[in-house]
Length: 156
Image (tube, rainbow, N blue to C red):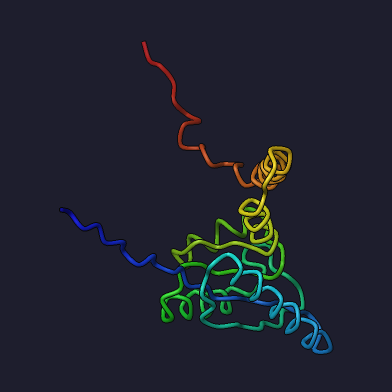
């Protein structure tokens, strides 16, 4: 007889990042990041570390400054993180920039919540509602995803 052994499932590792603008908001950022940690653990991810970043004004490219972005990416690679999870909502361009810089998946709180709802949806209506919400979330992230096909033309 053959014996089938199951491989232990690889647990993905996450680095959580919380951003606040005023020193007085640091306590709120900590409690929100603790809540995000619970949500991430609900998804089955292992939280490796939590970072708090003070950003007086969000950057259009990274949401944080470029030096802090490189620092966070290096920290994620040193920890062996598979995903960086931001407590704040990232614009699609910021998410693409982070993924290019850190070479890991980058998600925000909204995507974590959508994944939890998707896993727990029981009825057909609930699954459809989650699919609709995911599509609405994904739509702006598809911009420029296929630009490499934009200049194809036939020649004579």
